[in-house]
Image (tube, helix red, strand yellow):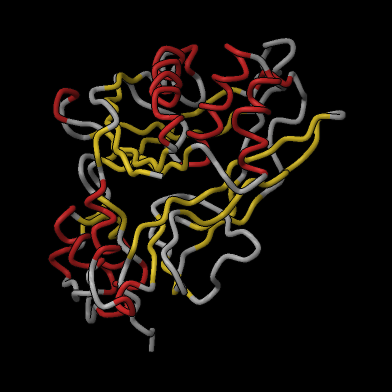
Length: 308
């Protein structure tokens, strides 16, 4: 599978975080809506069940920044406050970390380029589209770039099978027409595609380096859940995700069961090169229908250093 990057320009604030499993879910939704559930099952779900996904996505990162590999944090001293805030690296700093070079506090960037603003929202019944009982307000988050619109973009990296490249372009185009995430009917989550699927093989350059022992590690660029058989020797940050079921199901139960997920930047020691980790997870049922989630993580090589 070859590695690409696609750049998206938000045209409005967005309510749903651009996490890889969520983006993959919306692309699947585009297949189901336009081509039918049978096409989705044959084209994507069965391939994923067999461990051969047609594509694996990263989270969306602002501009050209990439996540801080968790293993790189162990070599930093005296930067505790900055370490807690830092989530991003420049491309140059990320490549240095991949090669096993030590980072400094100057390499670390906070994610303040994306602003978060809480916003009160009224509870709505999905079937009647009416508000809930008095006092049923809840807080949601609006996200938007702090740069002018014409200078801000998000980058998503993707490993794609050669035979699925054109199809993935089509699905991102459909998603751009639809909008991403919650409250698209009120104008949230609007974006445009500002690049083709650009070659991003520079993230895999370490695979061609010597000696072999130096490249026995990976860093994952996605929100994902490890699969049985994935490496377990690693460092990561986990969190509990409360995903939502697409309104197409017409079910009263909005939330999926909570899932333990790993954030981008998770690092693992591997015995061989890995293009991705994770897999497809069955999270719940609606009637006789199984709800599945693509919890794959896009992996790129990273020199492994024993954590002490």
